[in-house]
Length: 422
Ligand SMILES: *Cc1c(COP(=O)(O)O)cnc(C)c1O
Image 1 (cartoon, rainbow, N blue to C red):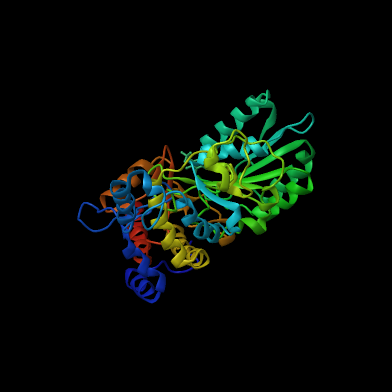
Image 2: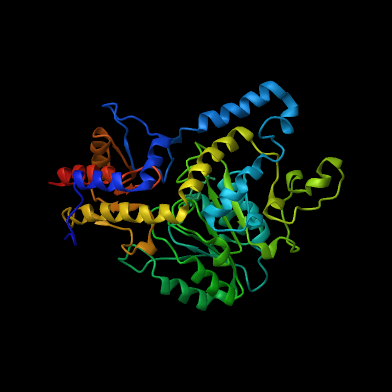
């Protein structure tokens, strides 16, 4: 039952007109629906839409390449040699880190492996990896293969913390209880900060506190948190984090990932998989045999980065920076709450909300359990110009991302859903 009346189109339009963040919608190329109008794009947790300025940023890099050839490393308005540094400040503000703690490089799973190479250091008696049940497959493959890499059987060392039977999400207390019980035998705790499927957000600082108290290393996968939640990574105390830039962060298909390494580790004697781009900048081109890592997160870089992809990340990060993640989170919460109000009006028993209701336990995504009808509902919504994400057989994910989705989108989707279940 609805706690309050669901948002109608007129009220939604008034809210849009009154919110200064509404102007960012114009900065995106939202794919057109069949009728030529922009899609209600609720699939940004999967692939964000294209920022309008991405083409110009990529074009500029292409032009520099044409004009300067190899000299493009030093010439042009944005030389390639320090190009990744253009993303440092904006990325640090986005995830709540010190500039020295972040770097944009590689892709998510690659970065996860690089971080695990440094931060999963099993010893006899302390070799468990604690993860959320229902983690994204790539994360599970990564930890399982790291366990094998260290001569362990994943069945012995990878421990999943699961929701209680019949419950959709994890209780915070159960995470902490598991840490209290297994912490002494746990080498690494790896959680999403927002689960990709249920949308449950975890209390990172609490997990870090409990993990560190038990002597564990604690890392996060922010694939569904970066650009969605106000992550405050540095203050959380997390040892490391990784994310991708192509979901909430709109940097294009296969776009580059990001990594965070807490400053306390920058000069620590950690094993790492090294490459020349992680080597001290002053002596990188001396081309000597010894590896002297940059004493920041940049020290984990491997290769000279793909500038064309990085240009697209820049386009998006500039928009996030102009909007501010705290502002976006507040707007995202309002949009999501309005969508939840509509969902509450749908017939119980035919639709169940799997995402936690409390704003601090979710971001801008709602997961609906629609037994028997999810595929059909997704198809009908798409036909009406509303793009959602189907996880077969019964799951729909709807993401009113605050940078380009608006209140009117939410009202339209709510009306369409209501009609479909009438
Ligand atoms: C999207 C996603 C990935 C994808 O990894 P890539 O290496 O970017 O292909 C991995 N983990 C999580 C939690 C994700 O949401």
